[in-house]
Length: 555
Image 1 (cartoon, rainbow, N blue to C red):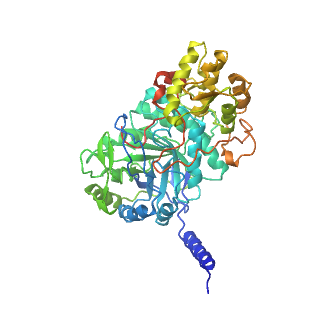
Image 2: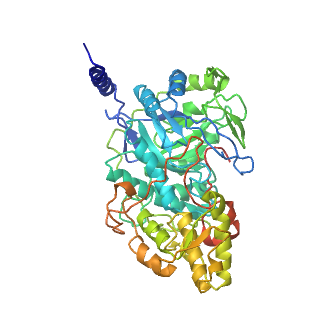
């Protein structure tokens, strides 16, 4: 008789054989194009795939206050697969995932069907780089790495996006320095794990004088050595220029010319203008034709699920109360258009080489420095947090109080002749305070301690409504603690999760820094990040800390 363990072993062997036999093709980048493992050209032919969570009606972009991880329910992915196959898509874009959940069923289901995923690493509210007061910090890097670790075992992750619509205008272009730093560190981490997953960014559309510098900056080499270490691999444009039964000349000729000499992969990370509705999707025929294939590698239609945005309602299907799917005219029209395309299999693999030009010059409108923020190092920031004289000991959820407390502490410090410069980050000047890469709780403990020491360590100066506690065991001043703990964390390094690191960080350029896990999160999408909230509005020019950027709804 077979034992249970024997049956399980047989099942595992059969499963491994079937997985190997039906393994999805490995897609790679060569210059500005994507190729299958057999050398044929690969085009992204897909849809946005994210069921909408609760919407924050007070946000300028109708951003979500929570999210639903669409890759965590095998039942739902199995439900949707036949409809994705009817559309003929080979890629889905997912905007938010919970790294603590099990994604095996969904990823296996889609891989077996030849469907790739593009996964955004950012999360709503506290898990993305800010538009208006950006920072690249330990908690954000931790969050990104946790997601990469969760998805690194799957063979159908085509790309990770380090941001979506972080910069929505030239007045916010300083924020792109932090996006580029995120791409640099994510690429370094992937390389350290021998992973070849592409690293990308999805941009909001705009005028040529906005999109041109942003896209070129993300794919450039600040060192002028033709190195791609800080450059993205794939640039996505959320493009809604083609409305109704338009034409290439009317909708796409301008953006086609703008990207004609682009050096990395470019695609439409969203498309599908909904005015008029229902959509006829005639842009599909143009996007996947020889007219555009020299520049673009396909695109993703927005959106499979219903989605509310500032531009109205989107969506191709309705999920009924019994979890069945009803398709719409939008779905049928897209199915027809995608079924008719046959993009050219050219140029051949290897004909396009990688090059990384010098970066666009900073000027009065494009405000991004070529000096990037350092790699955040958790061990260094943890050292500082535990070494200062006035500890942050919140009486409630840190995320709920840290912004207001930092605003208050910086104000009080200023009255004593001090400043919060050490925690500030400026993407225009390329100036980054020594504490700027640390999480908000560490920054707060540091500022608490600066104020406490400025007042000759008066006990009342380390209270902050019960949210601060004097540490009698720490004799170093806050600046001395920062100098000691952060001296080796001022440059770039390969991120390593704290649980995998041995000892303390070895410092910039050593190939070994340490970042700490951000925790498991929860099913509602709340993440254990501690960056600032709206409480810093009075100090954002100095501190640069709030963390809201475009998620996936339209401007």
